[in-house]
Image (cartoon, rainbow, N blue to C red; front, side, top):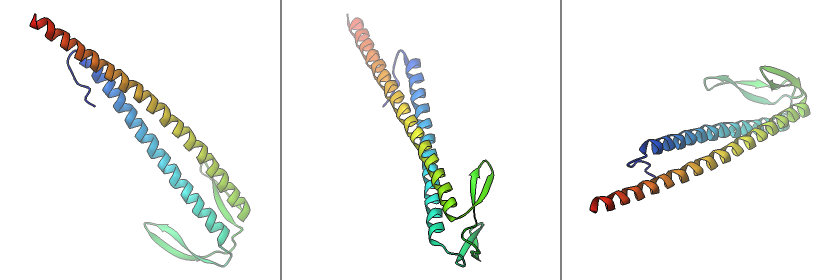
Length: 152
């Protein structure tokens, strides 16, 4: 939608900038949601691994930079789980799964908050777009009236 025009262009430009800012905010929120969904996928994979691995199993441990080392699981009931804030705790198998499920629930809550925020931003954007349309219609009417007066 073109928001340029004759008189009142400053207002139109301001509305267009506000719409653009809202779109940027929406994009940032959508990216955050995507990151949270990836974190949930990682948690699901961790839970599946915890539930299927056994003591003595051989796994590949990431070392960073796409390098891995083979390692043997000494005891599947000694799982270190991040608690957040730089803290971790050792949990048994069930405790680790419970901790990860709780973390996933917290992420679900955050995603719901962000989706609600997107809805609010969308509503605000629609109002601004309606305002811009009204301004554009007023400008067109003023131009037509000016042309009629010029023709007289």
